Image (cartoon, rainbow, N blue to C red; front, side):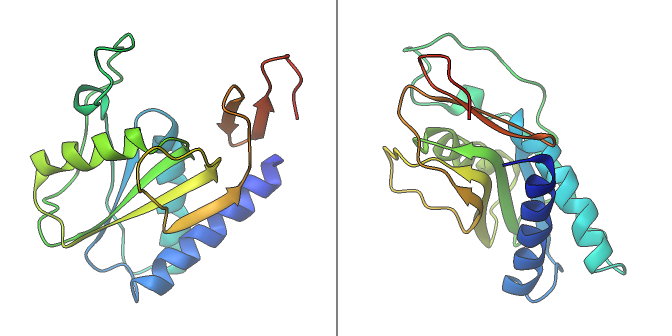
Length: 170
């Protein structure tokens, strides 16, 4: 995906969020630290252009301490979570750059409980690369991108780069 492809995917996801929720009243966007926060901000800006009379709250969540693999890999705390409003009764759209095993999303769902009880939680990802270990499926996807389990996927506003274990980028 090129930079313009990323921009188009974010615009499409923003429209899908507005359509699925019949507007954005009681919708809160929450980007997962670190990769999902810039996407949440971009979605918030795009939704504001679609629904100019309503500013959708945008926050961030660091799911690190809620992971189930905390003893299996080094723990590097991201940054402090910031949820800009009470999410009780709201529709929370969790946003991440890449969906892989589903474990980060599982941790984020647990972390959300510290901020209230949402009416519903939806998931938006820019890249779904498959290889799920948990029964988690996104509601909004920028691009399904089949990869090998050893591949690295880097997402930015400039595009998506997949690097294989052999060092070949695509």
